[in-house]
Length: 176
Image (cartoon, rainbow, N blue to C red):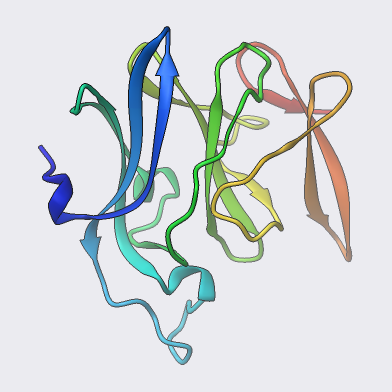
């Protein structure tokens, strides 16, 4: 389906699911010239790679699932400053690593948070939204966990930053 050698690989991460090796690969499927400082929408966080991107799940070098990141962020084109390391962390306390990928939004970074179950990607929701907004400028990062297992996220409020707590209810993350 995709010739991995003919696409830019942004990140590659080896995972283990039920003692079987898998690989998550973020590739650029359409390469565009990054925006220049004088272009509308320019951001330093988009100037390394710009265009269309797919997240691939591979088992034994065969693609078993594909996630279209442009669709996830509801944007025709997205960008990354450069290669980055995917961060794995059990966010919902189920014993399975979860991951996040972020892009620069209008004011904050916008993240999709996902896991891999039954050979496919599963995107988490936060108060019903598939996008988690935070002011942290990284394409993937560790999240702070609280003493009750909740996620503690820095959020931007009116004229201030504050901490927002999300609890997993079995289906999605709900803020208090």
